[in-house]
Image 1 (cartoon, one colour):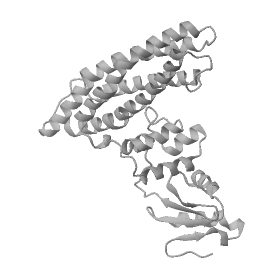
Image 2: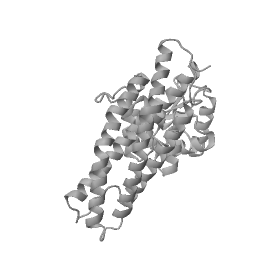
Image 3: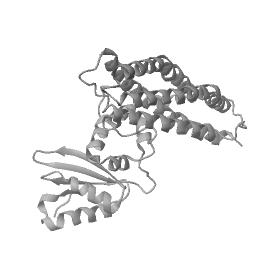
Image 4: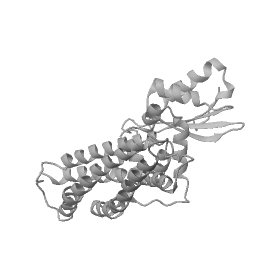
Length: 318
């Protein structure tokens, strides 16, 4: 066996029975923040899952080369104080990565507290493939995402109201109308349309008062926190803590997200049937677009606005 000063292991030079034990021994010898690069003549993905199972979620796995002749993988051991980021935190830092989570049906909004490995394990997804796509997003300069995570909290709250709340108020009445119309006309041959209509009505019943509470209570208080910080003031919240309204908003988000998951199941991921009329097709397209907007909306609140508001309140409340 030969390694270089850069901690590179050519696995092809080892006897088969020694390959995995050698990789594990060298990984165990790594200091936190340092890496081992393994060279192999085939994809060493089984090592990833064995390492995850036996050592836990304490490493990063990055493909540097993927065939057809050679596979090179950089394995970095996490530092002792380094925690794996959640999908919500990853999306908060770069909204482009949220598109990858959407692609694979990974919930970065209400389920945003899970790590990528945990979220993939729940759905039986190939975590190495998804982590690779997330790494590639860092190297893709073609799109410049909006810097949500850098905005002040008062600006972000206004953005949510002016962009996402306005969209809901404009679009939701149309969706309710089409859901009722399509269920009445096509319900006999498509029994799933009745429960879809009921779910749409429930979503409306949840969202309308939800937005009102945010705009009249929660967001004004968050803006008050920002103003207090700017003027170096100490505050006393009138309702105990911002955690209480935030918890209520997050529970609403979970209920609404579950309703949409049920709509997706009933509609087979918004698949338009062959006998669909123009209104039927439009309903499914609008529902899909609405859900997509809602994912971003909830992400901005759960993973950025609410998290930072809680942090800010801790600094200001005495």
